[in-house]
Image (cartoon, rainbow, N blue to C red; front, side, top):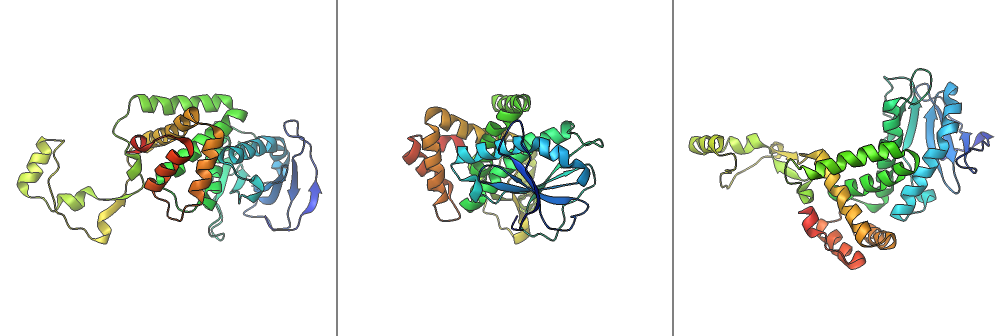
Length: 298
């Protein structure tokens, strides 16, 4: 937040002795009050109801720990990151205001008595670290989907482990299980890329080709095909498996190189011109870590 601080209340938390929370001069935002949480050398914005101030105070240490860990893993100064906003709310119908273009605000739902239920724990300890890794990536420019999501899942889960080890273990077990029984090839390189809609191809087939496709699931008719601007869709198939596979790329690299080499790789990727290409990122991985990851993302 860029507002001058008012009514600062220094609060010492058991898990983080240098944490504090400060109000900022702004009108209530859909019933929520804007505040900043301060750690050592960085701060980030939160919104909360007046009667949830104590809850936010007591949980600030966990957020600071996660943000600092994500920053250290990726190799950035947490004070230089434009962290996404967080809203703590008991209102299950809360919707982020739409007048702040380009500003992400993630909601952590509270129970009616102002505590974290299971949905709130999922959001605070799994979604938030993942999405704040994406906040760091804003400085990287445009990234391939496998790199963006793989880094966020990998770094975010490492931060989760520090503050919610049971949730970390559950998520990791589910990701590992997905990798042991893949439903289809992941084709990470094409994740998020555009592809023709099936119906755009089907309408151009002969009756004989359609009949053969119905009888032979592995058959695909040869082109050429022609497409209009409305005939394409982003490739978002096998999403959970792709999250698992992209995270495994980073986990494997870390286990076979070092945290320092990973940070050198990230820095080199950040310095590439945008949009970053998979080819360039894979080459830098080889240069900085000595690992060839091309087969992992094909």
